[in-house]
Length: 291
Length: 221
Image 1: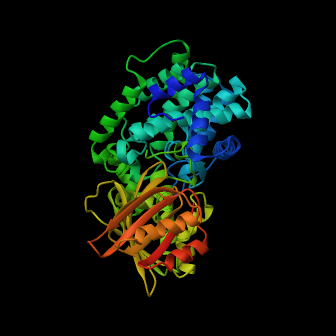
Image 2 (image 1 turned 90 degrees about the vertical axis):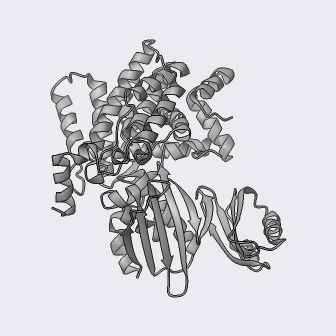
């Protein structure tokens, strides 16, 4: 069992009458010659790492430079006192995504999904919808396999690193992966997962990777907040029956082309965009003592 | 073969932050260098290119490369003190930023060694913690570090490859991917064999004692 594109992935779900997560699990078993238990256990371990990182982040961490940390705590406090305008789930996802990336910036342990800089989106969305959807532990593990199935297509047909394709390849992919997975968890069809994926990625196209001082901190932490909230919105759109006019695989193709033509200053070199603002340069000089 | 061949290349690795390509990938490249050198190391000179050169301090790429040379996994929380630990262990590491253009933005050239021997390797970090080794001691190659592998330096003679394959067959080691490179006809050549199983020491010793074989090293996963 194998697939290279989202179209092929959806075809397998139709032919075999199985979910996307099941396709991903069976492919891993086939290609790697592993048992269901082995594959499941490794993913459950990743889930545990994500859970622990969120827990640590919402209790407050600070990075070595002091540039990031503590924002997840602020949002959690805010939600205790007020009803968020964006709704509880969206804001909870944003705060848990930030929590993960704050831990990452503090050189804490996280699970790359698909990268470390974009590690907040998938767990942020998962642990935010958990309250409403009440998934079993197995359904939570499956959420990660569904995310992984889409990330697998992007990684092999485009790119998932900011250095190769900008932030659209990282937070864009991560947010889109989370959208697809939350659709499956909410009872949507594989086609709706693909629509949600396409709609999130479309809204992330062209997003550059411009970290201040080259650090995975500013704006990465907040981009994960943005990616995870967009993920929930796109999932809702797809579940409501909205479809992307441009097919999912073509959106991925567009992301690839945009990434290839993106100037090197905007691909994780810390030389352009927000990194090259007066404040961005000031922070860099202060951190590295080159002022 | 696809670049990313497992769901765990995309959901994973579990790692110490902050960057999968600049931190986790760096750990992995350096760990492969350590595995391949496979003897006590006293020095390492590391050339960084592209995004690696521009941002290595912020991403802890230097600490990650040192951590890999010390044998750390990507999730080892001692990473932040890797430089101090290396000093304690008598490993001297220096970093040089190189502005030369490279095919991939995240490229590193590592020269490692001790008083007697040295080795040079070029690795790239392609995203999500995935890496490829592109060059070893002047040989071009393609090695992911995802599979167990053996690297055999041999004289370019008829039968050298067959004798290695025979030994692998005898120990029931299945070859997943194989590549042979040589610098010149009849001179030194390099075999890269990715396998499905890890290789034991007895087999490694037998390989080393085979005619025309100069050096054998392995990567364990």
